[in-house]
Image 1 (tube, one colour):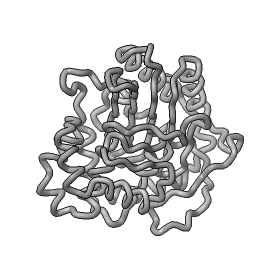
Image 2: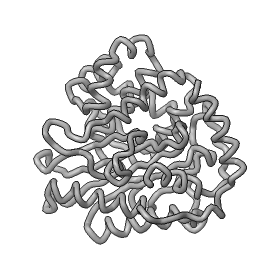
Image 3: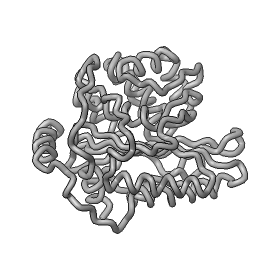
Image 4: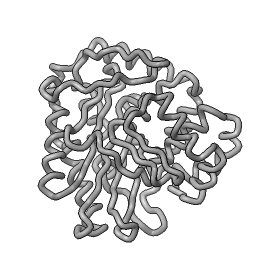
Length: 305
């Protein structure tokens, strides 16, 4: 059931989009129309999740992208532009930078990339952060992908970013012509191998749980527990359809300290279950089916190479 559901999520976005006069084709437009212009079924699910967060005192940023529908991005008004410390979801940004700027070196560091991306090793992340220039990673990535809601920091886990920018990062990296297809596949394969337990802690809450641990889901979590002075549960995913990375989902959340770590993990899964309801069948009325079919046909040929 879950393997087919993402196709329905991402096919519901509106078809028109303003072209972005950026440096290259992978950039997204600065797309911020009033909410009434984004009245789609997925928009309603985002707002249902946002309402759940508000009632429970959770700060949340949500952004969803359909890559087949010209990169249509939909977000929650209240929190998608709020910046959160990234914690572990800084790891894909480090990997993306290295694979774009120095792919030969990145190949030599494959073991550390695997440890960082699949096992959430902070030690491997520290090494790679230093190896590839620390804050330069964020500066260069933000400039290339036009990320305007990102604040740099000397420590990778303290870099702050909005859900809107994080979704743009994933989409833009996958569209970046300066990254080979092989390295994009390597990047996503590491995320599909993400481990449910890290250092004895279960981090399978949120999107991987909601998608019933679909083996094709490329997911990455970010977590700060109460002992860090702030409870964060970030859950992000690239969703596949027919072996093509079709959609991007980003949920960044901060929980009240009184809620506690275990309760926060339970609540983020309840929230993502509202965002991605298990039993809802979506209408195809608003989807530009011919456009999506053409994009999918083209991408299937590319990703099967």
